[in-house]
Image 1 (cartoon, rainbow, N blue to C red):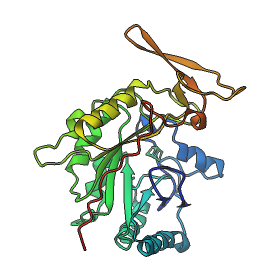
Image 2 (image 1 turned 45 degrees about the vertical axis):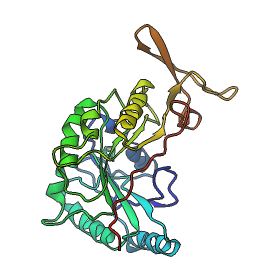
Image 3 (image 1 turned 135 degrees about the vertical axis):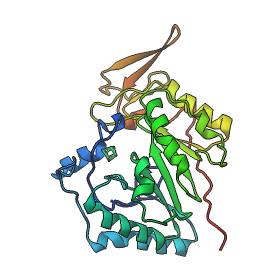
Length: 289
Ligand code: SF4
């Protein structure tokens, strides 16, 4: 997509192609599909074609890598916001191979590969290929069911680097504790991102859900990043601009205590959780030169 991404947790976003198929409840209101439709592209679904890009597009990360090298800093690249790198279809084999080559050629960039098809990662990587230390591999989990289904695959992947989960859109409480402590191979989830849903038809998030994730991460000393409340925000302490059309309120209960969330849109909702922002990141595991 381009440089200077507005997503706080990454510096750049790169898409090897556009298009995908929905695979779980987290996909119900896929913003990438809406965005593609808005620009007149029908690239969603098993039968639809994917959108591919020119060499100019593929050269962009090489420039980001040169800039990072010149500045002596590492930069994060989110890949891919408009697709799923591990979608399994024949026309994606070649662009995925090209992506791996590009990753190899850009060692100053930390590539964040986030997929809902974590069970396909081993199958779709070339035989004998091992993820390099500047790839962070992650999966989305929206509820406990998908935590159980996906996290075992995440922890099985051979990776010298970061394994992360994105709990966004967070659709129910999630017990992450079993995955935040090292397993028998000393492997655990290294980073947790959480956020509520935004856009049309957004599902409200009980504030207790991200609060619990933050506390679980703090207890396990795992870095936590709270991206956004999304469309719905806790009504308490929220400063809604005068005349702002906040139409709906939803009640959640903790015993007899009522907690209200209000539909204000993600800009007003912001990203303050338990009185502060959460911008923790894992340490990169790049071997010394
Ligand atoms: S996997 Fe991601 S890109 Fe694909 S449909 Fe689901 S949310 Fe959209």
